[in-house]
Image (cartoon, rainbow, N blue to C red; front, side, top):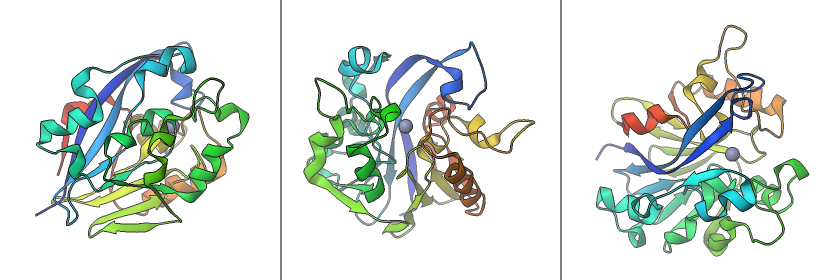
Length: 250
Ligand SMILES: [Zn+2]
């Protein structure tokens, strides 16, 4: 069976400052973004989940953000819309360990969770400016640790299954990774927060590509963009409303 990606909305975050998403661009503008989980179907080892959304209950107090997530948007319920039982999922991939991508790994209790070792190391001891998105803050344990025993660290570009490959894309965080999927009609890259929006990949008059406003290393970020260029793929961003509208990438 050919590989197919479905983008499911696990919630929305409201009123983000534009320059946090498009580097030094859009001053004074705010934007609402979906929190997207991807389901790769058709592979040999059953469905693969990429990213598991945010814990909305923590948004206001710990992230100073308004986030909504309905009962049917919760990742374990959302996959049921594709007739997938959460307990049948054997593989979850986190593009990185920011809270809005990794809070619900534990809702897939029989899955191993693939994360870059560099990301794990950094998530445990981030630079001070990334402590909040990794939930290294007073009063809570990071949500990704709810599924910590399931984590299988990987080191570098790694094949997951035929036609599905992890590719490192450092810049937004040190261990950010994308998921390259050879689907029926073309090759796609689920790029994580390397590209929040299509605009990040498409660039503007000044630059071919635009990094996120939140990053750990802009030099690595530029190399990651060059790496993507060489992959000959269609980029799927992590938080673009158009991805939710399109829904299926086959
Ligand atoms: Zn992020």
